[in-house]
Image 1: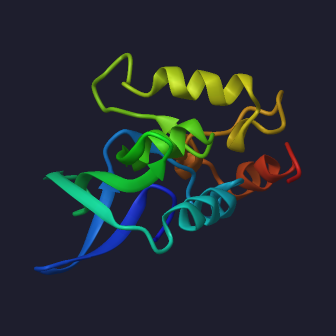
Image 2: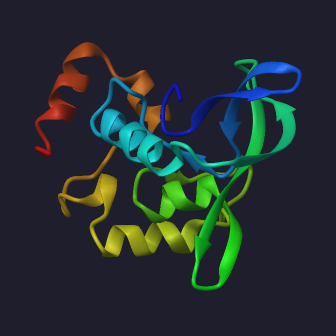
Length: 148
């Protein structure tokens, strides 16, 4: 796992870098980035995954729907990892070109329940696309908004 929305997965063809289709998680160097990655790593550790590959993004990562096997009272189910990241509050619902991403309702619930990125309530987490454009001083100010 490189961060909460980018994974290296061993497939029959070899090691492949995958980017989740429906979620955008904080970068490791930004507030909550490490917590998001650690939470998702704990969730996925030792579990079997299914990979539905799509096209590649501009960074050369394969876009993919990743599913994890979960056993509960309803039996064994395959749940989308991007939906779990959003529901746990560790990522924004994200689909380029879509005004209403499919996991938007899960994001609203995570925000209302102060999960993950929204733990601090009033502190507004910064999307990775905005974070990358910040200068060093703006990034340092971002860390002071909320303590974990």
